[in-house]
View 1 (cartoon, rainbow over the protein chains, first blue to last red):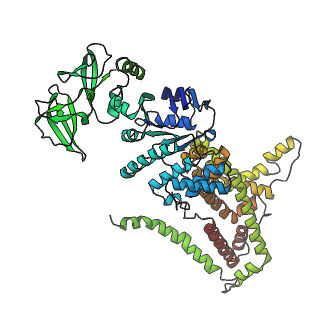
View 2 (view 1 turned 90 degrees about the vertical axis):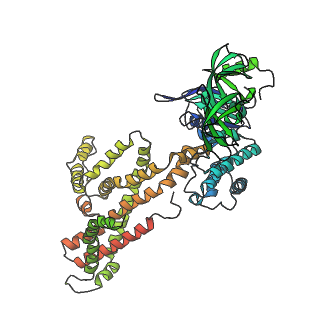
View 3 (view 1 turned 120 degrees about the vertical axis):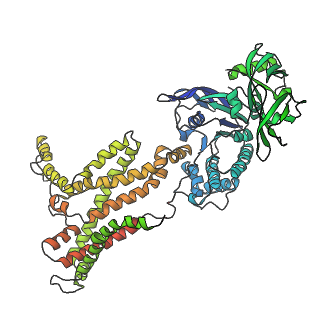
Length: 367
Length: 269
């Protein structure tokens, strides 16, 4: 085990009666990084969090924290703290006592407690709120109290269970910056659970994309965005155009009635594949200059860009994000570069995917 | 939507309230100012507060009500807590509430049968060689039966209060390093206090004026204000004095309600 590993899951599964919510999951979490578990509700991401915190027991497999097996260690004996989705701030205590809760349990003296709590309040920019009742705090402030209450215990790992989902959009974006900044300043491991791909991309060092109790793909936000392993990941992370095509040979893929140069390889000749092109990589141009010609079907103004939908002659749908307007009903060209094309095989596992990339990618080419 | 239909719906209850609560209250108050010969007087209230009999009766009412409440609480709180942790809690709750469906008088008579000289408890005591004891008409039997009757009224509000505590508070407490006992002491118990308060109200106040049990189970060895009222109305025919005791009892009840009532601030969620 690498020295930097703080949490390790070894073939951990979790079953509730008949329901298998986690299917033999293994992964390592390194110290000092920001991890995100991303997936739709019911994919098992919160179960992983509960297993780390100790609120549920694994049906099978081992969970290690700091090299020690913790399957039978109760939550109060784990050096892990949680920020709950509903914050779970104690309604019968004021802000100060909420934050001091963990310190009082540790029987610290009043002076140390006061010092640590006021430090935590300052860190979360909550000075002057110490004597407020929880019911007097806004959603964003409660969130900060919940984070302060967890961090004041100086955990090795901070678990965050969709803490931003109850906030409005503006506050949510603000908190994304704040959380990221906080994690980098403190240097402790954050494990963040969300179903919001934007949150995941914006904050994480590493994302685990989950589906039905399994980790489908893990990697940096850029890796996952640029090289999704399959249609599920491509669809879940950002907008994407996914069309069926054929891998003619290495670095040449056919779709939309034409053959294009690309940067993928390692498939069988003439294998059926799926091709992903992100809408922001498509550039509107004249029909003569484009790699593909599409007929514009609809156009929506999204503020930062126009969202344009067109169909090529094979009937594939193409979404384009463009700052320039298009005219509905007109034929336009779409131009893109070979590196904008990402080819995915059907039913490829993450190991196979990684192994294939190893074989055809030269050192350092993969970003 | 106008407000009219809503007011209309309230009329039957309002009538009920006026006829059987508000008017009787005033009648009692009115009655308390007349002596046994129908003369207007303040003598009743003066007598109440100067006579040793009434004051000691008040004290003993309080003492027994306090004991009954305490014992009920000590039994009900752990039971309510355990119930919330059980799998089939609704069923268990139903079973524990079931005795309230039976008339109090019937239950009292049942206990007479159980505790009497030839009752099942004494049969058992005789069988194991302890010999027959005087169980009925003792303070202990009074306390036991009163507690038995009051338990559901303490159990239910406490159970509801504990049930309402969101499980994430417990998780949060454990997460922050608290053991199960500390979680109970610092989170569950304080958050269930509203239920304890309602339970205490529901048990203490009626216990002040118990009178049937004092006769049937305690054999009039325990005399509470309730007994006194009954005696004045039915035996001595001194309605004025009976009403005065009633008025005092009502005032005490209101005071207790105010004292144990929910404090608005901070309780909101």
